[in-house]
Structure formats: structure tokens, C-alpha cells
Length: 211
Image (cartoon, rainbow, N blue to C red; front, side, top):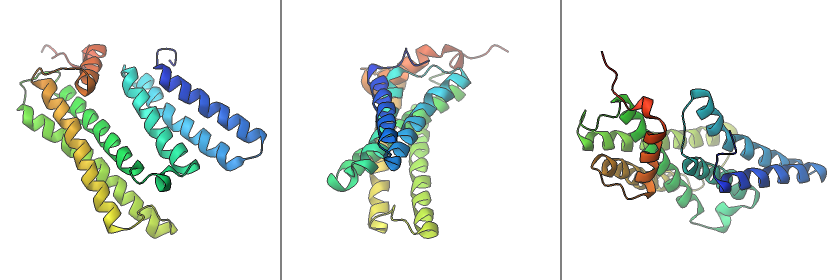
């Protein structure tokens, strides 16, 4: 289950596990908790893929692991959000691109891999809307946490929320555009390569069933 994952993902998992063990040995419980939480969350996509019998490209899993580690571990433990003004922007763009790809793959699966079942622009637009919706739900979550528990997840309030949503739209557009390029046969690696690899690894989801 883990041996076929990218070396980068396995290195991060090992580093998080080692950090958690060292932190527990030094009674640094908060650090140990964050390290274990980051490790657990980064393993969720692998476990879900195994449960659903879906073969996710190792590169995509590695990107998820990097994102989770950058968000929770580097962001919270080493305070990267305050040290680097662009940290939150990069993470929002990265997550939106990922959700744009996921949205495209989902609708492409619904059409059983038929590139001409719907206009290419319509499929890409659905992927864009899917990714933006995830971003909106996250901003609602931040607002609720701030209002209910007195946290400061929204930082500067409206400006932070609107800035995050604008960045989410940019990332979603990049992910959706990659899906559009894939449908047009413009596959040059990168994001379109991830889509192509997923389709090749899971042919049963992209073959029209005979009646």
C-alpha cells in the first residue's frame, strides 16, 4: 500500500513519525499531537483509495501529503503563515488546482470516459464550480469557527475571505483548464499528465457499459 508511493511522500511520512516519537520522548505533547495529526490526515487519501479500489497516481498522493504537511505542520508549528505572507496564497492555489482536477475526473467518470458526451467547456466549467464550491465551504467553516469558538481563522475578516476566494478561483481555473486541454488531446504532462495517468490506472471507470 505504501511501497508504491512516491519517495517524497514516504520521506515526509517518515519525518512526521520520527518527529512525533522524539516529541513524545521529550514530553512536547503539542508538537507530538500536530505531527501525528498531520501524519494521519496525509494518510487518509491512501486509505480511501484502497477502500474504494481506486488507483490514484503517486504524484497526486505526494502533492496531497506535501499540502497537508505545509498546512498543518509547517503552518502551525513553524508559523509559516506569519513568516511568509505568500504561504496561504500558495496553499489556496494548490488546493484549488487539486479540487479542479478531482471535479473534472468525477464528471468524466459520470460520462464513462466519453469525451463527446457533453461540450468540453461544460465539463471544464463543472470542474471549476466544484473546486470553487469547496473553497466557499472552507471559508464558511472558518467563519463558524471564529464566531462559535472565538478563533481568528479569518485573520483580517472580509479582506482575508475575499482574497482567499479570488485565489481559489485562479487555482480552480487552472485545474479546470487542464481538464479542458486533456479533452482536446493537448497532453503535455504536468496536470494533464496526472489526469491521463488516473484514467490509465482505472480503465473500468472510463469504459461505457454495454446494455
